[in-house]
Every structure is written in structure tokens, then in C-alpha cells.
Length: 379
Image 1 (spheres, rainbow, N blue to C red):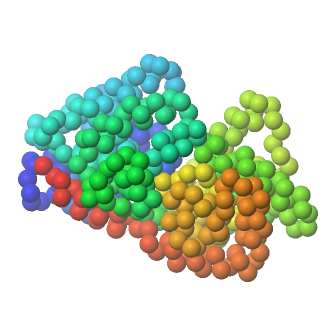
Image 2: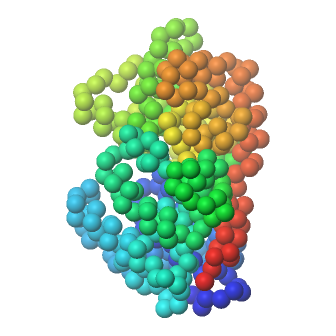
Image 3: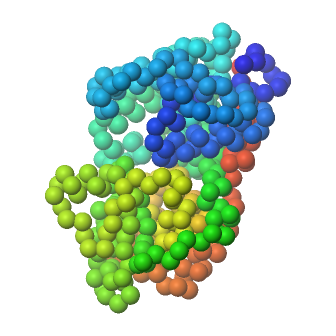
């Protein structure tokens, strides 16, 4: 790693240990942004982790300050070890001079020195705005750690204007310290996909994501809306609802509740399977309660799939007029959205609007903007 200074590549440290596990929203952001930053040639990045990540990228060095011990997932010991690594041990192997740390997961280590500089990406403030949608342990973690982030960060990257506004109105962060930088799109979801359309499914289906939080993704209202819409008969009786995510399986199995007719639980879907899953769907339904960005909205649009999403959070901003918007708290509104999106003429209109909208989301652009932020705060 080069010494600090004002010329040449910017030296950046990132706690990248998330990339050693399952990739969902934050992990996708980290992986794609690190790749895009490496391709700029303007960053030398040290990726700190507790497991080897296999990042063979120019200008990216992996460093393992500590190996993760074998602990039972979810146990108190595992939680405490993770907090110790994130807040203290991850910076154990940093250079002697002052550093620039990017908290891509929304957090900053307590072990930053006074001379160090920091940038933090804030993905959303749902834990503060809608605490009822979050597990108590998650809320307590954010409530304990985010005040330090708010005090210590030199600059904030918000993934949407909505999230930036939340930082100002809910956390008192000065607007001058915030830069809005949108996510990009993985190339797997863009033009090359359209040349290899998937085979027609046995039954037409609507696609939705349960994720790890059925409450936040509003899945129970969505299932009710789908069931009521399907009961209207006609072509609707042949349409299925395919739901990704593992949380719903736990809900149905643990509570002994029957899965409603026409609903299929797909569990965790690997990234390689997602483009064809999107492209084969009649529509993508994403009526979540709160999103700081909503990456699946633009993934579905890029795959040529018409989208129904929410009037709340950042969803309208990201959809940009290219989706049907529904009130996520009103089942009748969700039903109306499903009815509208399954009209062929409307679906065609939305496909065209969505394809145009996705041109705005580009990882190269996101990386260039992020490097600009680094240069403004580098030690």
C-alpha cells in the first residue's frame, strides 16, 4: 500500500467480511462497488476480512487480521465475536499512517484514530423510521452503533435522495456532508440477457421477494392480495406467485400454516438463476413497506419485466415513473396493481419505460462518484 498523500491512487480500507457469506443487498453493493473501484485504477483498496475472499482484482489487497473461530451461528459468542472484529480487530493490520476507511455496510469501527478519515454508505434508516419491522436485536445494534457513525463520519454516501433526506430530518446530518450515489446494475441483468430468453414456464407466474424480513417486504399482505385477485377467476386461476427468500418457509413451517393455493416458496435463489427468473415472470411485485433503494426494482426492469412497487420509501424515486405504484398498507391497492400490470398493453408500456429507466444505474458511474468523495476527504 502506498503512503498517504494528495497525488496518485487513493488508499482505502474496507471491512469486507460480509462477502464471505450469502450475498443479499449490502453484500451485492459491496462486491459490485469494489470491482468497479478496482477498474478505475484510481484506488488502492485493502479488503479486511475474517475469511479469504478470493478477490483477484487490480489494486485490491486482502488482509485477514483475525480468523473467525467455529462458533454456533446466532449464538451470543458468535455475535460478540463479530462485534469485536467489526469494531476493533478489523483495523489491527492497518498501515502506521492515517487511513481512509469506507464503511460500505453502514458502520464505522470504534478503533479509528483521530487522524483517520472516514466515509460511510447509509443504505436506509428503516430501523429508526419503522422500528416495528425489525428484530429487537437488530434495532439495539443500530441504536448502539449508529450514534458513533453520525459523529465520526467525514462524509456520508446515501444510496437514494430519500435516504439522504432521512439522514437530514431524522439524524440531523448536514446536507453538505451527504452525497447521493445510486447503485449500478450487474451486467447479468442487462442487454446480453435479452438475447437468451428463458423457455416459457409451464404456468404464468408473478415473482416477488420475501427476503429475510417478511414484515418489511410486506409479504403477508401480498399473499392475501394475490389470493383474492386469483379468486376472481378467468385467466387469473392459471397464474402462480413465486416467492424467493427463506424467512417465509420458516413462517409457514413453524406456524403450521398452509401455503395458499398457487403460491410457491422458492427459498434462497442464487444470483446466477435470478435473471432468467425475472425474465420469465409476467410481472415483478415489490410492494415493500420501506426501501432505502430497492435494487430488485431495476434488476427486474433490466430483464424486461413490468414492476409493481410501493408509494413509500425510495421505491418511487428509483422506479422513476416506470412502474405501477401501490399503497403497501392497502390490500385492495395491491390487488388493483396486479390487475393493471397483467393487462398486456400496460405490461408492454411498462417494459419500455423500465428499459429506459435502467440506463441511469451504472457501477462505473457509481465508482467514479465514490472516488470523488474519497479525494475530498483523503488524509
